[in-house]
Image (cartoon, rainbow, N blue to C red; front, side):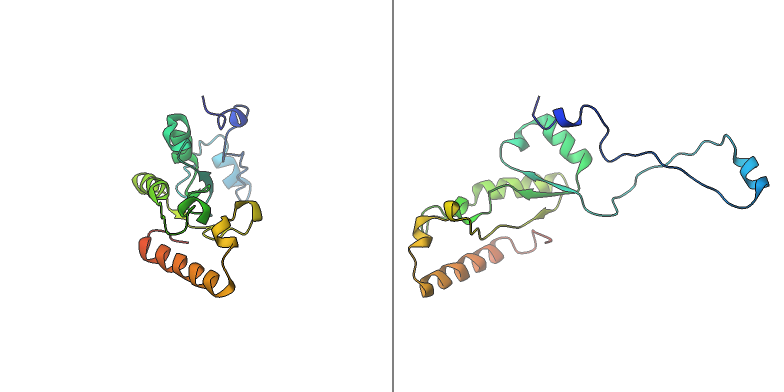
Length: 156
């Protein structure tokens, strides 16, 4: 069992009690007393997503929970610059591609965020060593590379 299951053992996710009130006078209220009402959740009013990574998409319990309860995904680290280009010029999009393919197979759009990451401990030394002009060029190159590689695949 995956750790994601334990927090949800004691309650149901995305469900709540609903009180229906009908107007129209005493006659209407009396005529519907004891009526059976069935409510079917057809679609979310707002997107609800969660973070995914290469490990959790291998866990069938997580995949089942994810596909039933979430509309969107965001990648944990797999699009961050330190993940995709740890060494200058050595690009590796294998993990990001696998997550995006997983989302496509399950009909779940993914947010493409954190393509630049400014947490000092997570910035590659080769980036820290760049001068201003070279850094601007590297940022521009990364952005253009991602836009051409993933054009139309991330709705936001």
